[in-house]
Length: 415
Image (cartoon, rainbow, N blue to C red; front, side, top):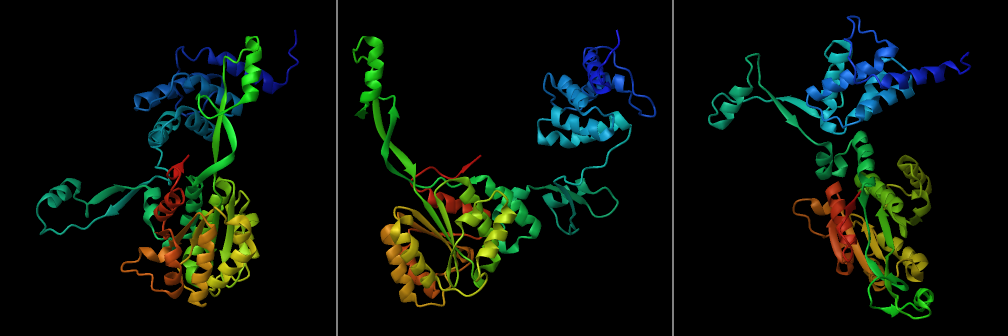
């Protein structure tokens, strides 16, 4: 009987048949390291044994998963073997370099160089010969006689960026910051809702509808009594970001925080404060952070311009806050407090805002400076009406800001 199937189907069947021979005798690789497609499942099983001999914890059943991945790719190229194995056999990030080395020894018979994205940095350290004690002993152990000793230092990029000032970030670090922002969550304070929800506790308001429905199963006897209790809902969070010239070193990093907050939860409003007030909620409602920053740049006409915080707050109070947006909400102001306007106007508008808002949190990047005092006219006028005055110069400072926003809820949570 002739086989009318296409070649790709017959090839895939051959792969499945070969999987049954994985536990059989495994031939050695030829000197030229050319891989026969029919022997690839058996050689893959030998590669798994080599990984386990090197100390890599390969899960049970991962061998067949590796074989099926190779069958799906249907290629004998080295890159296909490499990435299929890395995605199916490796479960811990610390095994990546071991897998890289074993793959080179097993499949090519050569030592692979270390990957460029390794987090190991070698730094030459000069040690004074006159120093004594433990430092000289450690230097003698690390000295190989070829010159200055090499000290291997391992570091985490996340920990480095967590305490680094936003003003010192490079473009690459700002892109990494976008990823770190996406893992942070601002829950927001909660308030009692008018709605009620079901409860399993025998307390609260009787739920007559559910009680009658359950009574129908017991000949009309209300044996199972159901109750409802008051539910809670998150308070609205309003973010007011200062985009004036004095905040230029921090505004772009803080704008990424605003974008992540808008995407992370509902009931979030975002505004830009400068010489005028600009609403940015719609511009921030996109998954692409670069597109969000571009939209904000197009919407704001006074980016890196002057500062009139008092007038901007008056526009916010008149148009949005007093009418309901800030009523019972947590208002977060991200600004250094420098204001060219009248400090009396600033104090008046902050007083109006404090009467309708649930809490006012002010995040100032300059607060982390040694010896800082809120002597700027705008900051001094606003401070009596601020519930929490926190730093805003680094990722760790924004975590503290998230905790301040969540004062009546849980602390900042991570996925």
